[in-house]
Image 1 (spheres, rainbow, N blue to C red):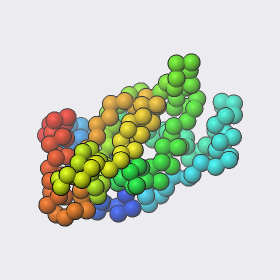
Image 2 (cartoon, one colour):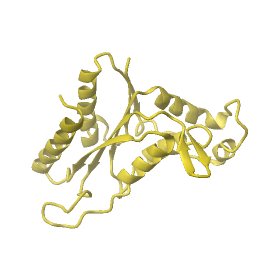
Image 3 (cartoon, rainbow, N blue to C red):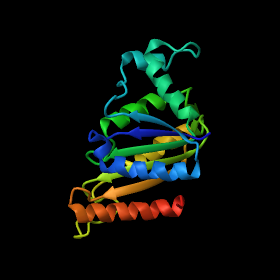
Image 4 (cartoon, rainbow, N blue to C red):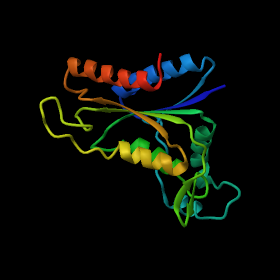
Length: 204
């Protein structure tokens, strides 16, 4: 049975543009995997704990029993380990990931547990699997806006690709919804473009 881990990062919940597109991705995945199980985590409603001194000390401690400072991290990592597919739905906040997604990343990218440090660099310890990143933005970051305004900086997509690759998840597909605060017509265009990209990777 296929397990899909669905992370929602928007404070707007199910009404968020990224959340709506993620539901379409999951519906498509379920057509390909009829008996798929969905594991849903709303990071905006229930944020992972931030890294503190106890966590920092614990990750450098000897392997063995999981100390209390790493219990939340272990829970999130185990969710990811059993997932056959990862779906992350997120807005772009100030050119980068929301704080709740950064908190999740800080909990699951853990030395000795999800990656190893080697003379040749960091090597992921998790098996690869398909991952979908759905990003909604009020502006345009993949290229100029329809009016010709320069693209805004994008520190989100490259960052997420890098951190997932660090732990071994490299099969990443990115769907973007750009200009979604610029009126219904722009929203319709953004969804049409994202669906076209979805069709190419995961046909109906």
